[in-house]
Image 1 (tube, one colour):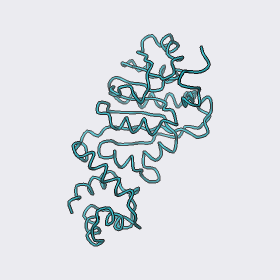
Image 2: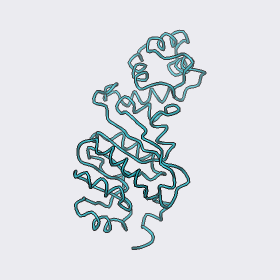
Image 3: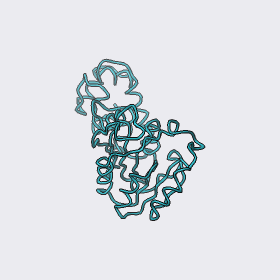
Image 4: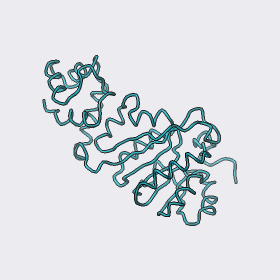
Amino acid sequence: MRTRSVHGGRHELGQNFLIHQPTIDRVAALVAATDGAILEIGAGGGALTSALAGLGRDLCAIDIDERRIAELRRAHPGVRVAHADALRHPLDAAVIAGNVPFHLTTPILRRLLQRPVWRDAVLLTQWEVARKRAGVGGGTLLTAQAAPWFEFALHGRVPARAFRPMPSVDGGILSITRRGSPLVPLAERRAYERFVGDVFTSRGRGMAAILSTARRMPRPAARRVLDRVGIEHDSLPRDLSARQWSGLWHAKDF
């Protein structure tokens, strides 16, 4: 096998292979609780592929490193293996799983959250990303923009020593589930995302001041809207729950 892919070495590809069996088992158990065909992104050395194949469901494993494909096919003859880039390959399975290259976590998540087919995702990502997406310690702009259509949950921290080569940061197991009943109509998604972006980037000490700035409205009117939705005046955008964001959106014509 060549020591370097045409796409670069391990650093450029973000290759930190999972070797920690309890973590592999945990990811597989979370996937086992879902239904439907599975797409594994970033199959790499195939440790997670083996566990997912053991679920007995339709499985397609992809990797951008062309050196890994033949080896994956030999090791897993019952798995469809494709040489593909997760940033371009159709994310059209019911379940998306994988050990996501840490340096590509945000672009992969952004793309995933725009795809319409999948229902569940179980991803091993950089710890800080997993923690923030799950709203631990406060929500982020990306999570707030996606919250009406998706639920995020954190399933544990994975130490850096669980990977080879060992990265400089820990990982985290993040699950994303598409809501059966969206909190905001899908047709309003682009407008809602702009609204959340405006609120997150507007200045002010507390939501009353922030909303007043974002919507160019008097402070007393902003307070009345927050009271109607059940949002504290001195809270911040990161403090709002998915239902508070959707409630604020539905009260947007104030």
